Image 1 (cartoon, rainbow, N blue to C red):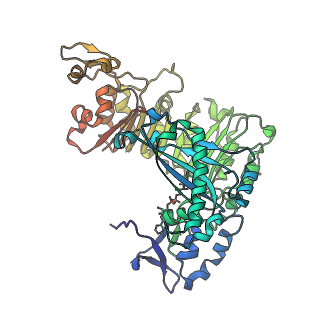
Image 2 (image 1 turned 60 degrees about the horizontal axis):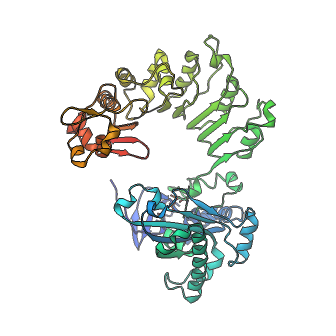
Image 3 (image 1 turned 30 degrees about the vertical axis):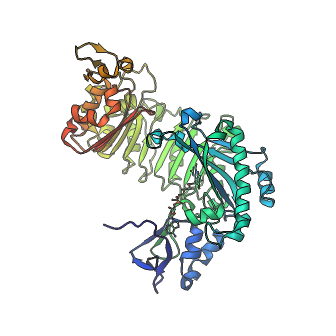
Length: 555
Ligand SMILES: Cc1cc2nc3c(=O)[nH]c(=O)nc-3n(C[C@H](O)[C@H](O)[C@H](O)COP(=O)(O)OP(=O)(O)OC[C@H]3O[C@@H](n4cnc5c(N)ncnc54)[C@H](O)[C@@H]3O)c2cc1C
């Protein structure tokens, strides 16, 4: 039980004599709590919310956060444009656009920093209304554009202490100058919108500080420099003050590496990384390198993804890798292996598998180890595994193995079944297999499955003529309204009914299905479920997303 406040800026954190956070001050009111979590800028938290009496406790943190290597110097400016007309009419793209004066980004940044009349180093243009399929239902004949430019705090710092909207003529002139230039670039890219603009407003780095609570107008918090990966102790949710924790963008450090160096070098480069996504280059010169004993541990890594299909992996190498990731929670590996213990039926002894107690999710993409008895040891080593993502053919293979079937049944609560990797695959997901799956995965509360291999049911007209769904849209309106749905055996609708019936006997609360469905289900999913499934007397919600061809049901 608790309360949520809006329009409630925290002005100070309450800290007692024992140096423990005990609450916050909001608009002059003290709100007491057992712990305080600050989800805003770490700089603002330490610099402005910690009272003077306790500033000495955070000085060493502040010194590092405000060092030139970490402090974010780049803020941004925004411009919001209102347009008359919908996306189709105005031909608005769903993608974003970046406009830069040249490829020399560093030089362009430097020029603009020294002279705010120089070219903008980068302009970002996006039409949020074109991306939202429901936008025009709520706001017919209207569209919006957001234009963002990099902006330096120092250009507007002189005006920061003046009241918002009353910052004076000099500030307004500066804003207007930027507005005109941003508009010019916008209209150069979209000249057809010139006469459609009905509203324009823009903001600077100090606008962001006022409305969003940013520090010096920064869009993404602290600087994304190599220093960030060395300071994980400082940029940690645990603060120097007891019961005060930090969260949000300054505490999240992730990296995607595309390099030509070998794996140990990459691990050495980012010792404190938390999220790591490595794609081993196809032309990697160091393919001869083996990481042997040189692979350092990544003690903070929680999420790891590795794609390496140029050189084969042995089981020992994989186990060495697992050993160096002591707190990893999510691993996705996309590897090639000729190690017979992983790929052949032959029985042979396995080396020791370390406990994978943080492993929560396993995904299979392209192939399955054929020695499932040995592979089941990996599942056994992961007591907290809860999510499985794989094509149906692999799932079926897995649960044919008694040991694996038992261990997965006990552990998995989220099951994501994807399309088979080959259309010629001998097993396709159908209704006969559903009861077996449901009784195996009796703990599953979230199920997602791809049923695009099944056809939707046809539709009957009142005189019992059966027609294909695709022709419904061509029927006259009154005739269309009189159509009835029939759920034909083997159709995607019949499969949905079956999945609900079987999995609902256990713990199912969320069901997502990708596939082709009859028009009636697509236009009013909730009503269809009320009329056709066991959900008729229950509280639930169902929606169909036309763009993704996806049904979502929450019970
Ligand atoms: C224009 C723009 C475009 C962006 N585009 C992308 C993008 O395309 N992709 C991407 O990944 N990231 C993007 N980002 C960055 C992304 O939005 C941020 O990294 C992310 O929102 C940070 O989340 P957060 O929870 O840490 O902080 P925030 O989302 O900033 O949440 C902090 C909240 O705390 C509130 N707050 C501040 N001070 C106080 C206070 N004293 N008391 C109480 N509440 C307070 C704020 O009002 C805010 O609601 C963009 C940012 C901007 C500004």
